[in-house]
Length: 268
Image (cartoon, rainbow, N blue to C red; front, side):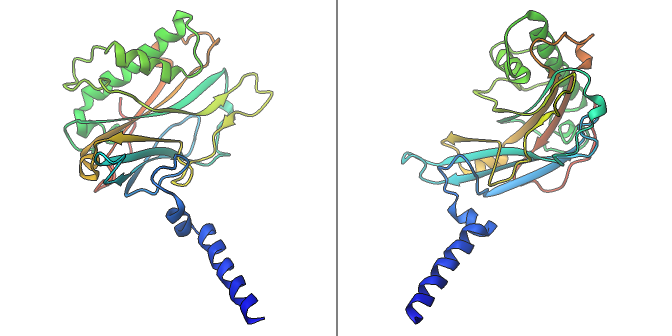
């Protein structure tokens, strides 16, 4: 009887280890893409109204493996948003739209601070305006072109990475990177026969995107500026907006770890 009790206690302990967040963290290996056990993580709240009346929070984190694939260090990066899943403002669902979030990681000077969710401290207020304008025009041109797409922001970014837009107030080539991962988190449908499809809020055990960076140490990753891009754009087949300014773009700039929270402001 005592032996049976000991076996039960051992299995119960293992079950609790798996169920508790700390236990799950130990079970999330570096090579699993369905989760991330961040060595460093940061989060910034931002305004994505009118669709979300309450602030949404952008999370970015990374892990490191010193041996990588056996040839040197490697980092594992991930991002996600957190929000109230039931917090959509249905009054503004007036056409078919797609909301997406993307993350660009790379060398940029400056420190996340100030307006435009920290981006003004990285490249200045005028550059923030240039980046938003370039994104709006790229999405507007995509919609007007008749090109088939399912993710307007992702399609526009692919064009911008190959044909860099002119941004006179930005010193660094912001879109000159190998990849910019994108995730769709809201699909609005009008007339609203069904509620919008809203992606469940993410977490470190359910990140929205995870990818690996060869030859990167944790110190190098921590020095990188991460630029989050959130867009709410017309879905394919919808009429284009009256002007590019009708396409909502929000930016957020982060580092992980990040010392002080950024000012909560949408900027230009």
